[in-house]
Image (cartoon, rainbow, N blue to C red; front, side, top):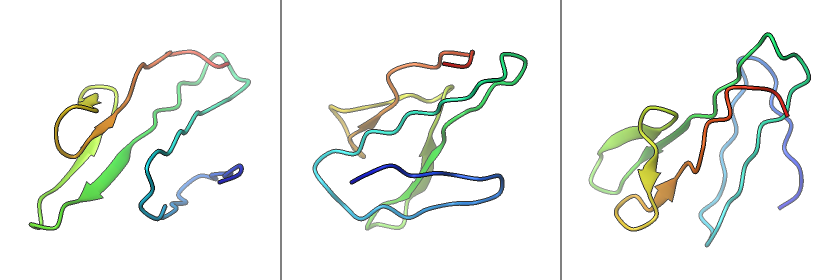
Length: 73
């Protein structure tokens, strides 16, 4: 897929695929960035995957956030 650069208040739309991997990197240890994945299912259900709701690769919507580092990498 290549590299995606996100800027403040910007969003992207990713086409359906077998696997999408995203990682946030930042250089300021005083700031914490959080990755949110918003989704809408065919039945109209809308929700998100994020640090407080990690999701699961074993149940719908089959998305999982594996960790929240709370620090820059």
